[in-house]
Length: 432
Length: 91
View 1 (spheres, rainbow over the protein chains, first blue to last red):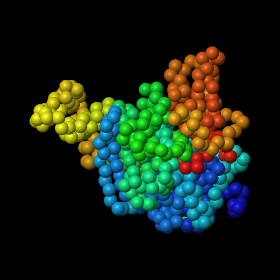
View 2: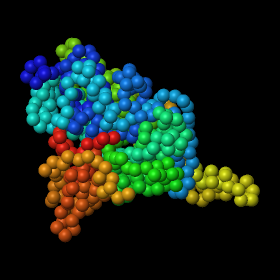
View 3: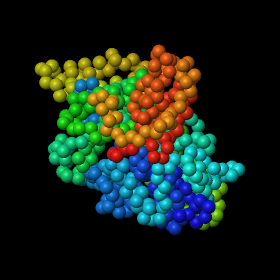
View 4: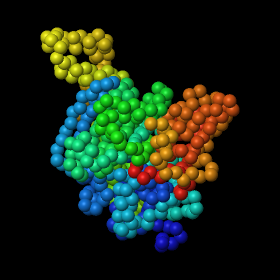
C-alpha cells in the first residue's frame, strides 16, 4: 500500500475526532497518511457526552448534516440545579442547529470512512506501543507487529496519551487534572422522548446537571436525547473520588433516582454503560504540543473547555490546524520543531488557546471554593425559589429577611467575602 | 441497578493475559487502595486473606483512571492488544 519500506508522509495515531480531522485534511491535499486505530473500528473505544457542534464539524465535513449518522438536532439547553430533593431549571430554547446529538461509535466510523474516501489509509485493530526516534527527531511508530516510518507523526491517542508521556512532552497527569466520567445510554420509545422533552422527531434537548448527588464535589452531570435513547452521565474530578472514597457508578445511580431526573428516564432499558476520562487540567496543564517530527492534537493535548462542555470541536480544529502545518512542512521538506511550532502559533491565534487562556484560573478557583459554589449556593438557589413560591400566610418581607438571615447564619462574614472575592477574581481573569 | 448488570451491556473480547500489571509488593504497603473504589468497572478487589490485589482485567473499560489514581504510581498500564478489550457500540 505504501510507496516504500513502510514509509509514508504522515502517521496519525488514533481515529477519534482529532485524528480523523487531521488525516482527512492531509489526504485532501494529496499527502499520504496512515491513520492507526487500536479499536475494532474507528469509534469503538471512544466515549463522549453526546453532542457535536455544527460550525466546527462543517469545517471538516461540509456534508455532515445530510450524510452523517446524527440522532437529534438540539433545540433546547437546560441548566438543572439539583438540591437534595428539589431543583431549579433554567432553559434556553431556540429552533437552531448549534449542535447535534450523535452516537460516537456510529459517527466516528462514518467520519473514518469519509477519510478513507479522501485517500487516508486506515489501519484498525492495531496498537502503537512506542515511538521511533532518530536522535532527537521522531521518525516513526512501532506497533505490535511492525514498524511504520513517516516524515511527521501526529499523536491523537486520547486523554491517556502514553506516547506523549514516552516522548517526555508532558508530565504525569495528576488526579485533579482529569474527571472520570460514567454514562448510560437508556433505550426509550421515540414518542415518549418527544413528549418528555417537549420536542418533535429529530429535535433534541441537552441537560447540564449541577448538584444533586454531586453537591460539594467537583462534578457535573449531563443528559442528551438520541433518536430512541437518552444518554445520562456525569463527570467527577478524579481527585474528589479519591478523597471521598466514592464509586462513580454509585453517584450515577443516585443521580438517576433524583426526583427531577427519574421521571425523564422511567421505563427505559439500559443499552450501554461506559466510562472515560476527560482532560480538565486547562491551560496551565497543556503539554508541549510539538517537537522535531511530532505534533499532539485533541484530548492528548488537554484541549478541552470543560465549562462550556466543548471537546470534540477543539479536537477537530486542532487536528485540522496540525494537518495544515504538516502540509506546509511536507511541501518545504522541513520537519523541525521550529517549523512545526507554526501549529502552536495557529492554536494560539485560534479560539482554542484563547478560550483555554480565558479560563486558566477557573479550575484553581473551582478546587478552592467547591464546597461554596458546588454545594452551598446551589442549595441556596433552590431554597430561594422554595421561599419565593411558598404560600403559607407569612408576610413576604419576613420571608426575605429570614432568607438573608439564613445566609448570614450559615456563612461567616469572612467566608462570604472569600466567595465574593473568588467571583471577582474569576470574572476579572475571564474578562480582562 | 448493579454494576454487573451494567457491565453485561458491553461487548468484550478478553485477552488471555492481563494488560494491567500492578506491582504486588507496592500494593501490600499501599494505604489508600484507590483503585478498589474509583474504578468504574470494579476491576480491582483486595483480598485481605492473601494480601493480594485481584485484577478482573476482563471487565476493564480502558479509561485509565486507575493509572492516575494509583497512590504508589506502581501500575503498569497498557492498552490491550488491537483485537482485544472492550468495544463500545454507542460510546
